Length: 136
Image (cartoon, rainbow, N blue to C red; front, side):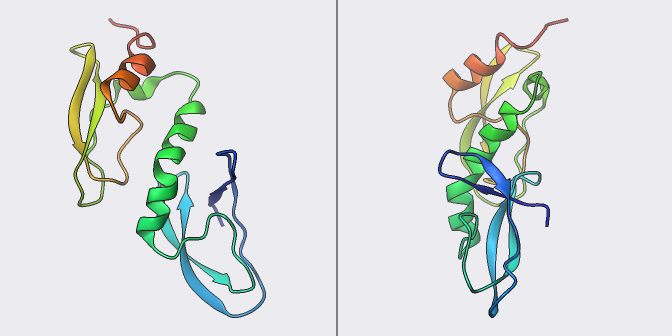
């Protein structure tokens, strides 16, 4: 199953289906999809990436997953992306780096999906993107 789980150190590792016992449906954080998905598992135990609700999963993992994904990108090409509202129905104030204006601007984020050009405040956005983008 292509998923990952969060260790206490903030590292994502592959999740594995539990084979014994009764089965149940829970949620896990999928690093590639940057969202929480349903998962059927054996009730003999749970990993650290098993949550009873999608909201619990998103609250625990989504921002950490975003930072892990950014850390794995060698060039900060995501600073050139246009802001992406995402796929959910919530409104969270965030910031993105505007490559044309060369500074960070505010936008609304839905809470799931979107892209890596999304930061919780202008200071972090500027620190990550302002010096990392070549201007043409």
